[in-house]
Structures are given as C-alpha cells and as structure tokens.
Image 1: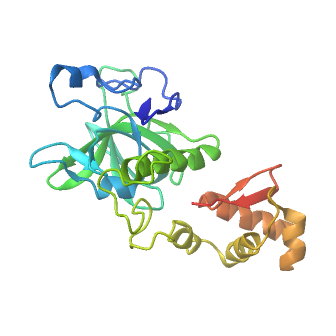
Image 2: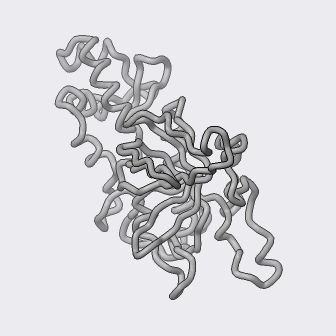
Length: 272
C-alpha cells in the first residue's frame, strides 16, 4: 500500500511467500513516532525507471530520494530485456520505455524452487516489488516479488499511480495551486528529458513502432469519438486492411500508446 496526501492504492497482487526480506504491503511505517528516520521512506511508491535512475541521496550517506522525498520500497512495471542467472541471484534487465534498470532476485537455497522465478520469457511485461539500492554509484532494485502482467491495463494504471504521486509531491495537493517538494516547475521529468511540460513518453515510444502503427496512431489522434476508434473505421480512414490495422494496434498496445475501450478491436490514444 502507498499513501500520499490521502491517496491510497492497495492490492497490487503481490501475494504469497515470495515477498520475504521484511517487505510488507502495509502503509507508512510507525518509526517516525519514535524520532527515527523511517518516516515515509518505507511506504510502497509506484515509480518509472527514469525516476529511479535520477534519484539522489537525500543527504550525504542518506537514503535515495525522488522528488525530494526519501524512498526505498518501490513498485515498477516494464519488459524483461535480458536475464542473467548466477549462483546467488537472477538479474533481470527491465525496460519501461523511460529507462532500463537491473532487478536482482536473490536465490533462497533452502527453498525447493530456489526462491527465484526464472520462467519469464524475454519481452514479458512484469511488475516488480522491491527495494531501491545503490552500489558503487549504480542503482538497482532488490526484488522481493516479481510477477508477469496478465492485463495490459495494469501498465496504464501504474503510470497513472506514479504520475499522481509525483504531481502531489512536486505540485501539491489537488486544488492547492502551489508547488510541493523538489519538482521542476517548468516541466515533468518522469518520462523523458527536457524542460517542456508538453513533452510525454508518446513520441519516443512511437519511434519504436512500425510505419503502419505510426499511421494508425496519427489517425486516432485526429479522431474525436470518446469511445475510441474501431478497426473498421480506422481501415476506412487510412486505406489499410482491417488485418493491417489490428497488427498495427498490437504494436501500439505493446508500447503502451493506446488502450482498448468498447471491445478488443476498438482503441483510444493513451494521454500521458
């Protein structure tokens, strides 16, 4: 569970005995009442990988901070790009479109299954729960639990969760009209570099798509139907076949640029 300014998101699906190492799905720790430093840093925070990479020490030798707030327990979603199996751990290279980070799952030799799930195929979307760590200046996530994404809508939900928390900490509570913590008033750095707040993840992800997908995306951006665009309407408007449209839509779905609405062949553009 994560809690920021009244926002609470629970039940990300991390169930069962693979979330050891002191990780809990509870809210903010109670250590702050005892005068220690464990105030909000053990709350579970949804993040993008770019945020992890750009995190900095809250003070010399202190915990890493994002948006000026110390953070250790994080959850992220991305695609597995590489798997390295070693004696003591399995390292997954995870890419969410904003950056790439190593996720290490330590092997428990006392468990019959080794304590590490190595069944993920390359390019599988996974959700990671873990602890943000820096070693020799390089950040990685020590995973408590990793599971495959079964519903792609969860990718979109996660981005919304991460955006909400980021905006709350940098801009203040909804309706406050003021800045929060250490955010850049000139733009948003969650997804891409640059100071223009109008930038989003869409352009960089669209560059990874095939020409037909770019064509479909451009057509959908100009459509005004709140329920999304159907495959037949897109085919008629672009001169493509329905099969080509569906293949292009799969490409766009894989990059998190569109989402299904009324049915599996009706889509709308995801506004970041």
